[in-house]
Length: 423
Image: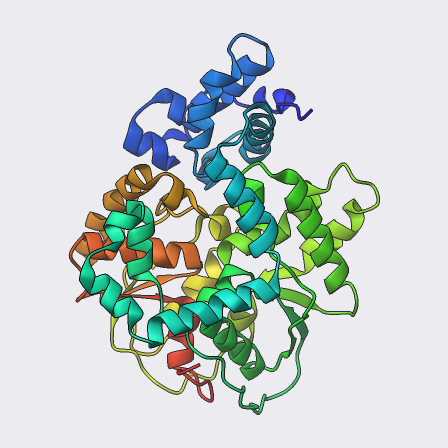
């Protein structure tokens, strides 16, 4: 039986510094939906003063963005408290039929399976290229068949491109031997970004390897309280990346990167794995750090005004804020504008925007006036979930014709010598 992280709750002095950083407190305006309130609920549940029933909704509606950890003056480990509450709730409440189907088919079956993801990728390509997607969208039938969140997600789905044979690039020198972490949904929905990221790494001289036996990082399972599957996937990845020596393990996904860096925390009670997990985590860096450190050979200009939506897990868990901004600000011709509340979560949070559509759209709608005020042509993200959520936000604000949403890697590929833009 999992236990609530009771001792950790005493680090919270209930000062309220976390309140302005919490997206659900800002939109729902309830103490029980703030980090301070949730910590107090966990403490009272551990003391038997309230039932887990009273804990469930506030915990379920937490995005897990961890912005409260950055804001906290006493270094409360909110992530550990949240994880313990999710695990207890997962054990205490029988899953609904829908939840069981998601857990069995998506978390345990689809996401960890490279073969199944390739089948999905092929199916999505056929759906888009055959013209069926256009017919379905014009018919207006999707909102009647799918929940509203799923229907909006389908409309924002990127074009799934056929993988092309990668053209060898001439790198200036070999600086690092790098293992690239592709991710599961990232490699299915945004495979071209992975290919561009690898090309950019090669352009700065890295010797890049993609390990076939790598798997899903386990972040979505972990956020859902399925700690057992998350640990299984972590061990599979650790073993896969240990097969050869690499200077770095690199990803271009804010959420997955945060999960990889927390493998040591995830496996802290398993003596056979903890040290190996810590070694794995120390090797992980986001692609932006390598590219910023080594300097890209820019060959073009981008005469646009850009704003940036940083990934919460990149900012608050990976603590990587400087490298993406430095890269954006170094692009020739690009004008960067910082928006108010830039650090606030966009409402994506894994599959939160699918499970809690109204709450997620309230959060992204609250961001959009700040984005609109900056009058950008381009909105840059560093995580596939943020990418889709901000496209939904732009669409809902009526700005789809004015603002493009792109991953940082796509933007850098457009202005870097020798990197194909059409992968």
